Image (cartoon, rainbow, N blue to C red; front, side, top):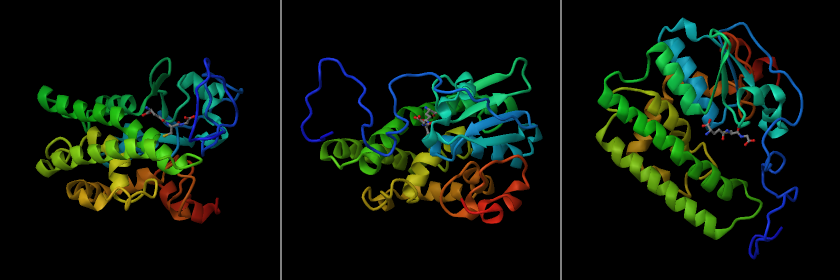
Length: 289
Ligand SMILES: N[C@@H](CCC(=O)N[C@@H](CS)C(=O)NCC(=O)O)C(=O)O
């Protein structure tokens, strides 16, 4: 594969592998590749996920709900090894036909309710527990505006910038330039908004913050793509202030640990079945990964 000169054929065909960090899982067809059931624990909610930004949105939400006293939000969190293609198992595809984490099952509904797409999961949990979602129409609409802004914008950051800056097999100026411009514009959108507002929706911490922080908050905190200097994240002072404020929350610290399979072993909780797991089952305690 060359990246400089490429003349597309009349009809694209799948040539494996195509290079890049995700070449083993990128595929042009949907559906299951193998039969495997999902495990099931004892709690009302069964989460099948990974501590990527999209996964962390949901584990932060669960930890925030539990911290706020919603004991009905107890959950089992099972890791999906996306690098090994576990998102293509028959069990996972039955919950999310789109084969992407996070995927959630609410076992208190009959039949089980399957919820996929991280914003759909956040909204479902917010409505189910009446939490982290403004009630009046005007403020709720602002919350939805920013929630959907995140869902529309993050693919430029992850699938665009992150992919070409960090994951592609070679560095190409055109896509890096194009997506850097867009990501910096998005950071500027957030920075101007957060200059006027403590959280994304006034003084209320909502699912809009819970959706945006794992992507843009962690980006300015220097945790994404090793790109803090390249993007000059320090210049987005209001985003940084907001990111640090949310980072200091206990539920956020816990949510980041769940289904984390890399990095500091003390911050990796591969499976989460009980609140005590954070103290007893991290990888530094049960064995290095
Ligand atoms: N729009 C989806 C995106 C989910 C997504 O892209 N998940 C990634 C990890 S962050 C994934 O499962 N990738 C596996 C694959 O593409 O095969 C959401 O927000 O839930």
